[in-house]
Image (tube, rainbow over all chains, first blue to last red; front, top):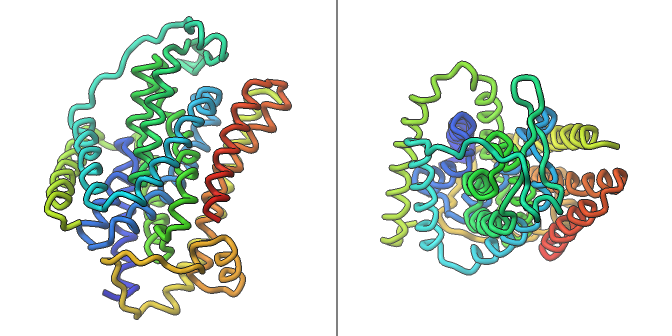
Length: 279
Length: 121
């Protein structure tokens, strides 16, 4: 394959991944890694390096908009970033030391979870408590968010559990070169009882910082190859941008089902290829 | 400085960082395709890319010489620097708000990022 063909095929694939990733809220990284590894025969180390870079781009681009709308909670984000960055460094070091088969298999299970989420969209918790618990109060984590033109108060609970889950989310992010937004949202929405919209936007806000923590290790090990990362980053960014523009008009339900089936197929293929040693 | 202003500054910084980085990567990509479009590429086997793209100094030098891969990598470094700058801005913002607890929290995150990147570069 020539460099020209490779660049344009990867650019197109990444644009589709970024588009679907932003429509479904699962991010582009989670499909671009298996797509590169399985369809283009790219070594998974280059794939996760390129994906990590695209994750920083989409997270920062989207966070710019959310932060200004006043949804994300920067105190919660900052505090939990201590956990995600430490986890991300651990994950990146693990990525260097485990074999690529292990990475492929772990990736397959993360894809299974993403497929489940896309197909069944499990309910998030409803109704956040207004009062924070003792530690949440001491850390002044409670805040307000916009609901129908007014700002509604909410409290934050179970900080240690959220912190632990965030460390795990960071480790996965560093190991697989993904944003692991789904796990971050679970940590805030389910464990810490933060309103769903605040959880998703704060998670997005944290993804870039988490990924930056493992970027150093990736860069020094040569995982970030400019010839692969260039079309992935530009494609995912462009796709995600259009995704946010059409979000209001799209029939998201149909898309989620299609996306969920694609992700499920990718999950099975990653696990099988990892077990048989092909990836 | 209050929370809203801090949030707006952070939003602007993130947007500027992403745009600057994407423009640099795009320019490097055009240059790369102009020079190497007919090259045979194969990424089946992982082979570390050499110091040009793996160290800060290598990237800066090759980008300054308009090496296309160096230029792309420089754009990617700008992108990696964007969230780091965002954390640095939060340290300053919380310090100006006299919120000592969160100035320290942000500083811890900044130190973790700096240690991780320094180890690499």
